[in-house]
Structure formats: C-alpha cells, structure tokens
View 1 (cartoon, rainbow, N blue to C red):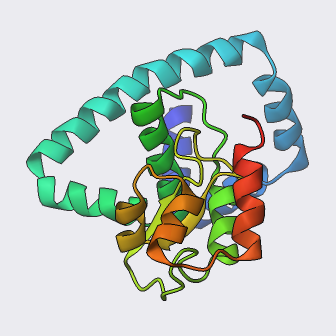
View 2 (cartoon, helix red, strand yellow):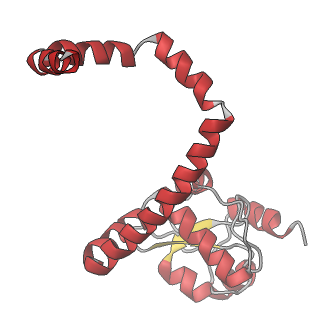
Length: 190
C-alpha cells in the first residue's frame, strides 16, 4: 500500500521529483561522498572489472560496426588522422614500424609547435596546400622535437633517407639558418 502511494505520487509530481534529484546531484554532500567512495578499494576493484568487461564489448562492437560500414569507418579514421592528435599517432606508428621504437616521445603538442613553426616547405619553400608531410631530419632517429620538420610531399619522397645537407646541395636549395640549427640538434647525439 505504502509503495503504491509513493509510485503514484512520483508519477503525478514528476517536476518535483526531477527538481529534488537535480538539487541532490549538485549538492556538496553528494560530491564529498562520491570523492571518498572513489578512493575506496572496493570502488577501484569494481572500476577495473567494469573497464575490462566493457572494453572487450566495445572492441567487439567497433569491429562489427567497421565490418558492416567500411566506408563510414574509413571516413572516420581518415578524419581523425588529419587532426593533430591523429598525425602524432600516425607518426609514432611509422617510427615503431620502421625503426622498432616502442615509446616515442612525439606528442601532439610537438606537432602543434612544428605546424606553427613551419608554414612553408622547409626544403624548397613552396606553400603547403594539402600536400604536406612530416620528415625526419636524421632519417635514422625517431621523430622528436629536434628531429622533425614539415615539407611538401614531393621533397619528402625525393629526399627519402638521404642526408639533408647533401640532398639540398644536390638539388641546389639554399639551407636556411633555422634548418642548419635543427640539423645540428638532430645529429648532436651521434
């Protein structure tokens, strides 16, 4: 009887119930309780189990979605790789595959800094209108703050694994002071 009364009252007064719930969820008392609860071992164990369980479900769902919608999945992936974080991820994977480097120090903050620093191709000086790549100054070291520049795709492919100074002299390009300084930093550990 008492439960029926409360159910009916809640259904008749939805605005009051929502207001009371909102007030409670924003209260300091609740925030303090949650802060203390999240520090308990019980919560940490629950969170770990929950994350492991749902990570597998999420992976399975993502795989199923990618198989059912390959065009959309590829579009999402390409959209991500054109972001600063996606570029950093792609370059770290490149180093891992080519040089066997597992823990690269390349971060998206470094990519942002490089994008601000190099507005044109550092080799030929052309505008970077969609045909932009990131290149190793020292091709035998991983990407890092000292060992990365932005250049056009044509120069990147043409330079390949050549020494930057020899290649630029061969092509007849003038080496800027900024590039000379970066070259020294990239080769200083050898």
